[in-house]
Length: 433
Length: 174
Image 1 (tube, rainbow over the protein chains, first blue to last red):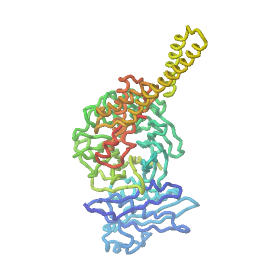
Image 2 (image 1 turned 45 degrees about the horizontal axis):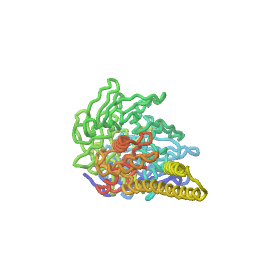
Image 3 (image 1 turned 180 degrees about the horizontal axis):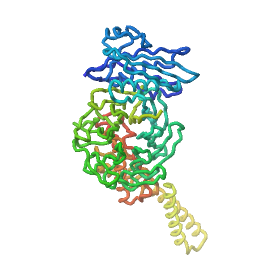
């Protein structure tokens, strides 16, 4: 494995209105053995003044973070072409570059940004991709992430997931008083953090609606846990539950019409389903054990959950049509909080081995289990919408940080916050444009 | 509420003392005897009053001291919601005091950082419920007890390792 010891640090630029505390810093700790050498040449700026965003740098960082690419340093580039005519393959062969991405950015009207890009294969001496992205100038970073998505898909065959967003909870400790809890929304690289909710009481379990337009979370702001639903565009929110006991772990159904959740209003924690139009509740599990952490299979036909009905926590599957429950995990004495990739095959979860808590992946077809992480106290795994990476919470010293690992375990990076603890990441679905 | 209850007891004792004194002074013949009786009555009244007040206050103080001595935090073993003997003894002191008043309590269940957050929410609730059930069995009305779990969200000690974890696996009575 190629260890990049803090070689690449993508610094996050915060807007003035945003709490600097919520910022994440990306540190790549492990990349692939033979990453593809690609040059992301600074894009030509065809507007007045200076460019609002270094588009090429955003793309460069995205590709580097995937662990599958080794971007060429700008200082090593022998030329900086921005049009096809200016591309001379010998310049790139000389520095062992396999691919070259060039582009041009401009602003039309007052606020409309346009990014044109072209990707060249140095060995084949051919242009393999060209296109453009357009949008509001304030979304320049998102446009850059979309270019990175296109490049990534062209070169790996897997759709990119850079133009997505993250939710996470951060905590600033307040010795002698109550801590500050924040629910933050950021780009997938941690940039542009926006604090959605701030509270002196715990915030937990952020989750996304399948269209990426709404979120749900648990807040203790009433001195008891309750589930809230919030629209991102307007900030409008609704309290969905206020039952005695636990009100936790909201999980949107793939069709967006209902929400699985944990309630203990009838004595002990069971999985319930709420119809989001009528607010009607259906109790799914009925067991004196702890049933919690519901998550949907992508086909919407069954729900996975954690239960200690067998003595120790394990993952079970509840079939919504038949009501049948089957146990899915058998390896190890602690398997909990499952999340399933969009392919319906890769299940990631918290797995205890040798007394430590790691993130593990179980192939639901072969049932083979692979431990992906080597750190301890790893929790809250969340899978990228393209199924390539798993984001999770872990501990570094006595601080909570976010970290990511590829589903094959080969690529790893960390996202500590500048200050305080971060936890419970939730990777968004693909965002509609 | 606490003060009212004590005052109530004192009043009851006071009435009893006055009644006894009134009975004993029924057959007084002359003024001096009446004056003596009145003085005795006043003395008896104030003595009874003092004694009652002292008794009640002391009893209350004793229970309060016992509660202060044991604290309001009950600790648990890892992944367990079983009440340990020490926690049970501490809880008994609270129950004694709660029997003398009609205060409501809130039981907050907590866990250490090991295991998943939602599972720990359930474990914290189990711990709070264990304490609640013990109190109910020992005569405290369930409507006086509110339980809430914070799981691993509000640790006392932030570090890892048993020395920190053992402080975080707890139920706090508030």
